[in-house]
Image 1 (tube, helix red, strand yellow):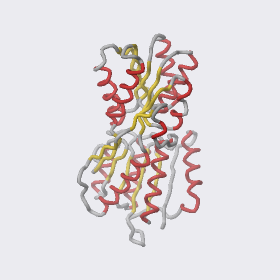
Image 2 (cartoon, one colour; image 1 turned 90 degrees about the vertical axis):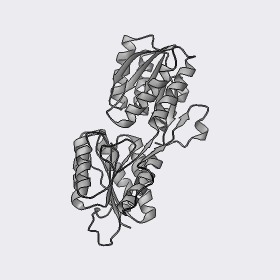
Image 3 (cartoon, one colour; image 1 turned 180 degrees about the vertical axis):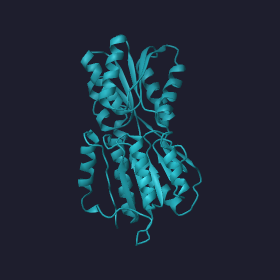
Image 4 (cartoon, helix red, strand yellow; image 1 turned 60 degrees about the vertical axis):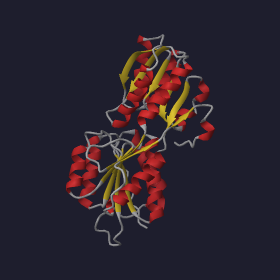
Length: 319
C-alpha cells in the first residue's frame, strides 16, 4: 500500500514542530502523493484537518491513516494551521491531483465553502468531520449541543444550582456554536445561575488564559467557567491559578491535557469526544461516496460522554 502523508505548516508556528514530528513518526509509510491517476487504480482520499498544534486533530489524522492502511487505500493527510486560506489551497491541490474524495475538518465552517464548491464542480465528493462545512456532501460530528448542555448541567449541579458563570467562546465553526447553544440552554433552565461574562478566544490555551484573566479581574466573584474546548479550559485553569481564584471549570473534548488536571481542584469535568471515531467514520464515508454510493443519512451525530473524576475510568482517554 502507498500512503502519502504531507503535513504543511506555516514557519514560526508551534504547529510546524508537531506537523514535522508527525511526518517523522510516519516513517516508512511516507510515499507517493495521491492522485486520481494512480497506476494501481486505488481510491485516493485527500484529508485536510484544522491544526497540528491540537492533539484532537492529530488523533483524527492518526485514525484516518490507520483506516486507510487497513483498507490498503491511498490517503494524504494535511494540516492547515488554523488558517482557512491554507486549507483552501490544500483542497485546490487535491482537486488538481484528481483525488476521488476529500475529508475536511474545517477551520471556518462558512469560509471553506468556496473551496468545497470548487471540489464539487470537479465532481469530487467532500465529507466534513468534527464541524459542519458549507457545501459538504456529508457531515459527521460529535453531538456538540449535547456536549455543551451536559458540561454546563454538570457545572450547575456542582455549584448547587446558583452562582455566577463566565463563558470563554471560540472560533466561528458549527461545533463551537452548538456547544454554546447547549450550555446556554442548560443555564436558561437554571434561574439561580447568572452569566456575568462571555468573551471569545481562539480555542488555544494561551489566548484563553489571557481572556480568562481579564474576566477574573472584572468579575473576581465569578463561581464557574465553561470553556468551549479543552485547551480553552486549560487556559482558564492557568489564569485561575495565577489569580488564586476559587472557581469550577468544565470544558469539551475529553483530552488528557484536561482530565490530568482533575486533581487540581479547579477543573471538574469535560464532555468527551472520540476524534478517532470521527476520523474513521469520515474516511469510510469518503470511500463510500468515491464509489458513487449514497449514505443513508447526510448527517451523523456521534454521542459525547461526560467525563468527571467519577466516570473517567469508563472513558477512553486520548491526546
